Image (cartoon, rainbow, N blue to C red; front, side, top):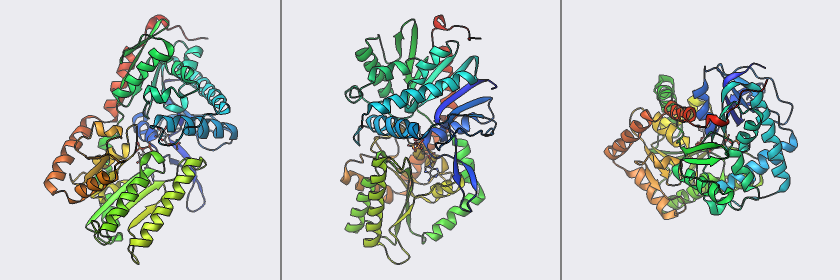
Length: 472
Ligand code: ADP
Ligand code: G6P
């Protein structure tokens, strides 16, 4: 196996196996913020991406994707159930998102988490060049930094958490809290989306492990681990270039016609996840239709909700509830040929998604809790004509940067309705001024700036005292 100077380790590879409409087997870019952030970044760099290709069979051999080497890690049916669906997505995911759904704790899941983390660490150890840089991603792999350091003390190791890191009172619920903290502290630099998350982590390192910790540095054995906030971003220029393509503009015009040339199009694009606030948003929309503040002929709502983690109970329940709600609203308020909500539970290619962004007068992004939310940033970057109103939850990481959005608390139904009406009724000057400021921010704070700031902090971090030569 050839080795690389840069290795990214993430549960998911940037491509997913899927079956095309004609029945043929194809590889497609996987939906989700982590892949959207890292994929444009790594293109054409001599890097290896260690990850899982979806499915529970043996690890497939994959060709390079845009010049990046793929090193697949296999999950068998038990790993998939207990590591991916279990500890990662039914323990950590809900706990880290304010416990908006109840986290579940099972000892068997923890065993699978350890086992799978070990497998990822071994794969990374195999493909990293001596003295190379390994960048471990997200909550599925929190033990990898520590395990990898034990295998390869010569490496520089970074860890980045794409999701929120919870306050101590929630994290303290975790039966294996100290092992998880220790695992992350195997890194030289731990990056979070927000400064509050780094603060939470430092408090826990002091409280649970008795370490000396500030919001920037933590002393562990003979090393210093740096921590900090690095809000993840998108490839702003690439998104704008795609949005400006004539065929995308044409597609947006046709979509508007297909939607019946309404005065206003509202769009939401989410993975079908209970953190995204889909039910609350639909409820607010239903009340606006019922009160007559919004009329079906003038306004349409397009809800894209791509199925996600669809064997996990909480996700199945959510999907049923959302689809029931959509059916009910369309039954009550739609007319023949004029549904109140256009509901699409399909993955789309980038050009189609961007055409949808271009057609949306209002983009409603109202998660109950979200590490960042790249959809909000993609929408702003795609509005190349400077129009469009962003309705954004205060509880998305993106709200710390996109302060000119129409900010709402999605738990407050009346506030959500008022925010939506404000975005729908805003004057063109107000909308343009807000959009200009947000586009300006994203022009400077793009994915390349994010990577450069993280990687230069990683270069500077880590005490070289503890670094040893690569084993032969
Ligand atoms: P999360 O990471 O929780 O899914 P983000 O908003 O940060 O949330 O990222 C979602 C990413 O997935 C975005 O890049 C978005 O464009 C992409 N995406 C969302 N829905 C779809 C879909 N139906 N088809 C293809 N890509 C999608
Ligand atoms: C979020 C997580 C990612 C994950 C993505 C899609 O963005 O932070 O780690 O890849 O959701 O979820 P999935 O379970 O399909 O990988």
